[in-house]
Length: 206
Image (cartoon, rainbow, N blue to C red):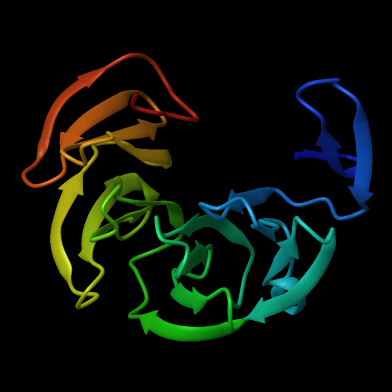
């Protein structure tokens, strides 16, 4: 699925044929692990449109809208088992949803500023949350949250104003942070261990 100026476009990887499936123009998307659901949101919408739309990929239609945010969305992430969808954005709210029932199941206390990125660990027991720390000038912080208790385990200061993306390694022991002035690799249990590479808007660990 591609998000374009003209809406959502599906691409057949075998034939490379394209087909527009919706006029929606989302800026934030996330697939469920089984590839049955697609979560869509926009970062530029006002309070009246600060919602997450769930799209049924098998039937090709919207199934529900999740409302609760006060400003545009910046991040969406499904848990590895697909039972939880996390959403966050400019309002600093981290909302947790049951995507199958289309309802909110938990609401974490507001963060310091805008929440910029989200990532679940491969085992689903940890959620990484990148947010502003008392204003962008003081740098972004990545909090690690226990998904059983939804309590913060620790915070990793990044030394940069904005963290664009987060990615866990397959074994869950390393966390990559794509930031304004560098990409940094952190220990998922301890601290930032090294910085490298220039600005990175997206990161992944194989």
